[in-house]
Image (tube, rainbow, N blue to C red; front, side, top):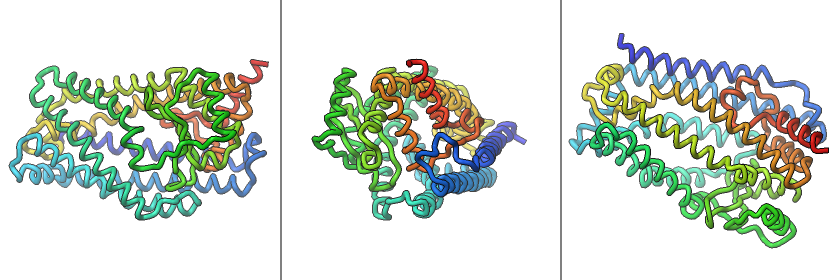
Length: 415
């Protein structure tokens, strides 16, 4: 048997088994008793609902992983990639156009496989637990816009990558890295102005006590913002969130309307201070640098296996091509991606603790952030007791109980 095929199957099955083990550990780690820290904002019924939500979502994720992996393995062994390649070549287009058609067909097949799970997740599970507000019309509109953006933005980038690898010689991977990095920066600037408003409505926060309190805090931190906005997150979900977006004069402070509705003024300021902590501590730039380095590594490794005939034999594809190499490389890169994700998530968790400390110190009210974390957890039905292995491997945020304990320690050391 082709050793490349053995490795690819091992990666697919191994990744599934790892996900299933983590999910199982998470289920076993669900504590039946409400943690004492949350006794002031949870009752037994609400805590039981949050645990039931975790169980339902976890088991659904396990099922989706099993089905997706099984279909992928069957598609691979049955010659599905070869069939798609023959279809793409049957039009006798130039190599880049053929490559776009090949990868586009694979993306459509992947979308069709995931669509039933997305529909059930939104309109069954999220609706069952009172989160979903997405209508079928909104879902279809979002789908159409996302598809159009993928074609208009992703298509040219993919074509450029194919062109570089076909014509760039030994330094093609470097050209791709630089090109994708530049494109990423452009999107970061365009997103708040052109892209995000396609999906949500951003409304300037009206004058009043909350807006004045936010302005007072931003002035105290010498932070210039392009505006303070609420976003109609309630149009799709009842979950709470807040974020910064954009750079320079395009920078926005954005609160979900659900968050403004559920939190008190001092708690909203605490959430804002946490997000500002990420900015002041340069976490955004650090994570962007990490992402850029990962992209460079990806293209470098891709260049090493480009047009490898043994890899093509593993997928049953007869004619070697640059475009198919990109698709096949995704399977080989999965273990590297998993390891890098562990490291990036570890760094992200450290950033969350640092942003919490910044918020506690600059507002002078750590308890406001504690209360906001509790309310966010309650309203979003968060899992309060994830398994340590799940946290280490896949969580970008520390468990809320650990964040609160760290805040308490910060308060104690300051007093």
